[in-house]
Length: 295
Image (cartoon, rainbow, N blue to C red):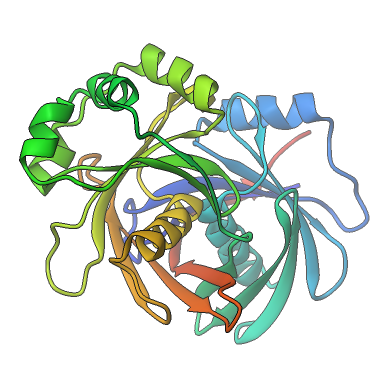
């Protein structure tokens, strides 16, 4: 099996979010779930993708954290198609289908840039009661009353474009940087709300940038992640629901600064006449290493 290491959502080596990518030999089936979890744990990246080629245009990709399988992973998808392109399995300036547990998603490759469909966006719930708000912000190392006094009026909402996260607004980039989660408590909270984790954001941003963001998913052994495609797809939809993203907008999210792995995630949202939303997330990637894995 071929193994690639790819830094996704960046054009700079050792920037972005690293992912492991395992490409199965032609005709081979996936290893057991136990083996794929152990492989992800051995590689120690937040996600490792396992790719089974169906035909020249279609691939079945499964995603594993060091703890469990997840339905979809944006940065590992970017990494997967950069690895497929690098390895000669696909051609630039073409479209492909990615069969995932979150559904069948279109992938467009243009001049080495990977643009991928997100699963149908869904708002699952929101945290509106005072007790729940105080609890969430306290777990994240912030004071809700202070955030409210600084002008935060948006409510945290659980949104998914493949994986559910809590979208948590904060007042400023300084507040975003100050987040210091209680990770055991955050894991319990994630279980309680049946989400992967918390995607914290601020709309205080330079011109051309929609939000600065940080992502935390300790329930899946990911204390913090440098770039998250699905979470920023969900944030695009949250922004649309809450008025700071408009239909047809191109969005730009900056992530990973606190980790010193700066990442840029781009998204686009279309809304049809019936109000149905379609979100695409895209980015570039840099090959770090390649080799063989013995499974």
